[in-house]
Image 1 (cartoon, rainbow, N blue to C red):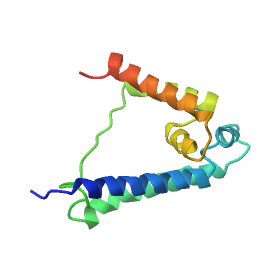
Image 2: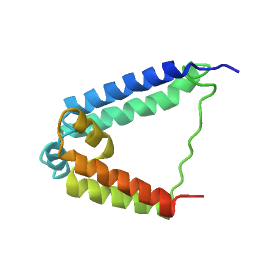
Image 3: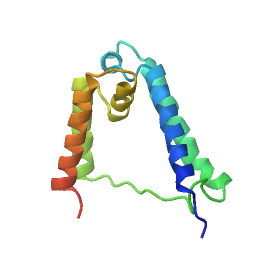
Image 4: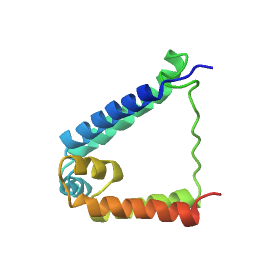
Length: 141
C-alpha cells in the first residue's frame, strides 16, 4: 500500500485553502454586504463566482477519476453518496435562512477573518456552536 507523507498532505491543504480564501476575498464574498446585495438581486456578479465554482467542481468530479489512476494524495477516489431526506431539507432550509438573514456563509466567514473582517467572528462562533449542537444532539451514532 502506498503511504502518503503527512507533511505533503498538510501543505497541499494549506495551499488549497489559501487559494480558496484568496478567491473568496477577491470576489468580495468575505463581505456580508456583497452577499446581501446579491440575495436582494441588486448585484448578480456573485452568480458568476458561484457558477464558476460549481462548474469547476463538476468537471473535476467527472473527469479527474477518468484521467488519473489514483488521487495525488490517496489510494482510490472515494464515493460520497448524498441522501435527500427530511434532515437534509431541514438543514438546507436553516442554512439558507441564516445565510439570507446575515449574508454570512461558513467558508467566506472564515476567509473574512483572514482579511480582518472581525465582526464575522460572532458568526463563526455561531456556526461552530450550531455544528457542535447538531453533532451532539442530532448526529448519527
